[in-house]
Picture 1 (cartoon, rainbow, N blue to C red):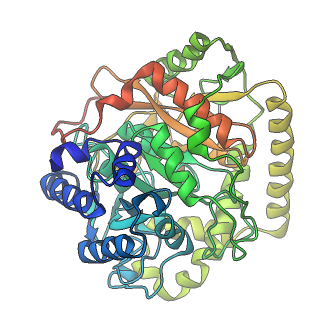
Picture 2 (picture 1 turned 180 degrees about the vertical axis):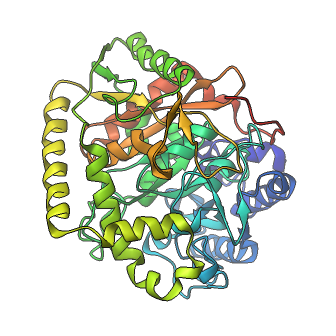
Picture 3 (picture 1 turned 60 degrees about the vertical axis):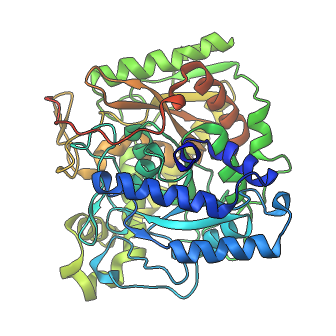
Length: 479
């Protein structure tokens, strides 16, 4: 029975919960059995809280005896990224500085998920403080790609992506700054959404007035992701950028999808990043499948020529705010990438920051003009498929040397600057079996239409039906 339960979609599992045909305790047991079976091969969920989960399940069942009244998730177990506090559960942020940290209170987004019927069962692995395109840290070590355990799962929501792909959990919470929900989704053939800034309240962030870092959902398919977004979305007075939940649920929007009429495709966002040739071909073939839905598909994109300069400055500011004080007291226990990012921000002048803000505003105006013509923008999510798990980042792409670790995320961080919602959906596999994801970008605050288009695309490919999988050992393919 437990093997059958872990193969259910989140939507199907919630339907059974609401009918009373299974209980939250049944799903907890099924997930724990699966975790025990596959976790040694992938290291996706290093921290479990089964007794807390069971206590929450029993309390939910006692306080809301009617299963239909248990919120969006109705008692479904979920994973929370190890950047978000969960009350009474070890929360390390992937850092040795916090290796033994046990918070007294959960982050507001976790409280919201729990109010809507989600049951926290595990914390998913992340790079130190979420900084990195590959998921490893000195506390828990490396998380491995389930399609080939010699490869990376990406970062920074790598543990969540792997847990979904292997059937350890039905839904995974994550965060995204330069592509942390989208990159691991691409490498693991799951679905990750970077929502509009404010769509999911952050509340505990130091950068409360910055739209750069957001919280969002990851799932095995688009309807599951829409369901989780409904459980996460809503305003919070503690987050000044937060938005109210929509009048129509995202789950309802995805259940009756409307096709886009005009879709733009770009292989590299106008040269923002080199892209490996096979990845480019797979993503172009995927984008052009929107023509099967009646859409016109054209090669076009806004001008992103200054995106890297803008992003690096604004990222530096965020690191200076978040890690500046820590640099003075804990430098020896911070990884080199965090020190580099933080020092970059601390060296910025007022003129540098002003130029970046002017550049971001001008880019947003160009994006608005672009979306007056197009419904969607499609491009590769990652410029290369998954690489060696022992590497921090790919050193070259299509023969071109990368200047730093964040450069391999240019296709996603450029979209971060727009403030537009963006989703990564599976679009195929390379000849050596590595997953490739298509990044689809919607209009500002246009999550509903974006999710509808992604759901229709998913129906065309059918790739979601491949999950969950057992972890597969392998070797690193030659470049």
